[in-house]
Amino acid sequence: MFKLFGKSGNPVEVSAFGSLQVTGWDAFMENALTKGDAYIWCSQDSNIDAADTMLIVRNDSHSMKLVIVRVEVTNGNVATRYEIHKVTVAYTPDDDTGDEINAGGWGKKAPVSKTVDDDGNSQGTVFAEIGAGIAVETYVRDIGMVLNQGEAIGVDQVTASTAGCVTIYGYFIDN
Image 1: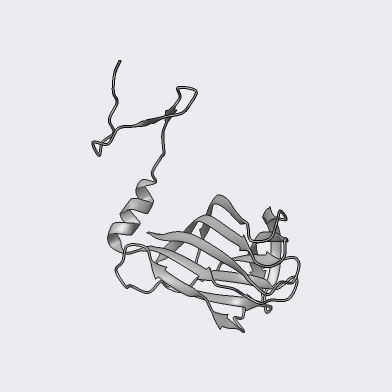
Image 2: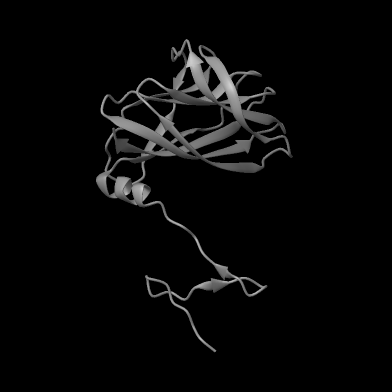
């Protein structure tokens, strides 16, 4: 019997069916982490009305594109559906500022506008829907959206709730 080891020296994992478990890694994300250009934005326990945007992230950089790689949503006290969309017009942040974490630990601020519980934007075409299961459930959607300067992504909550969380993961690359 052979034992396989990964690049790190750790043994690889095999499923119950004997399949090799492999996880890919985005070289661009790794580069962004080392440069301090990878970020996580989130809203925590947003008490918002139906159809409001739980979290919006807009790229304000003149020299970099923002690549959105993942959206996570945790239902609050209501099982509801969430719509992920590109904001098309009337982006005017009018409510609370979202939280930001530099994923590389650099403490560097991202060139973005981020708001929680926003109702001053127009929803573009919904390109993904998640949720609608049970209350206090987390849903994950991996995406590959590139935002140029002035473009934004938003996550709208369909039914009103008094809690819930959206987390958006992304990184910057040079134009």
